[in-house]
Length: 155
Ligand SMILES: [Zn+2]
Image (cartoon, rainbow, N blue to C red; front, top):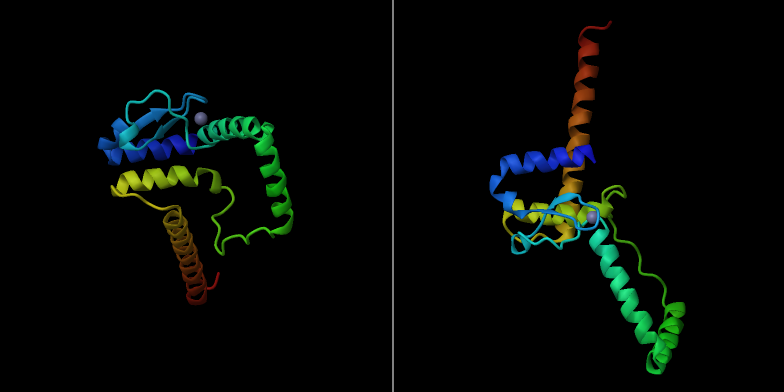
């Protein structure tokens, strides 16, 4: 989490106008950047799971209430039957690294604020892939250089 706050601080230093987008999660108290339209609100949940967990709890509450009704019961049986028949959709070809997946929506918001435009989740995934590839290239180049140096001046 310390590295997260380091990133947040350096982003705010580079883009001081984003300070007004700084919000605090009302569930866990973590600071995060939010959409300018939400600036100043005190009732936000962080994108690290709190707001999702909150939404999920609410939707579970809604659907348990609904499925208790007779009409809902019939629908649920149909849903369950269909679920047994349809195979699960395949995973996307290039999923984000698992350690980054929970914070993808957050990176999405952050990149969107920095670039001043709405950014889609797949764009963030593509961006992360590009960065990872560049890191690999730099590393390979460095190894190549050391090998070349060893060739010139063997130890
Ligand atoms: Zn939270």
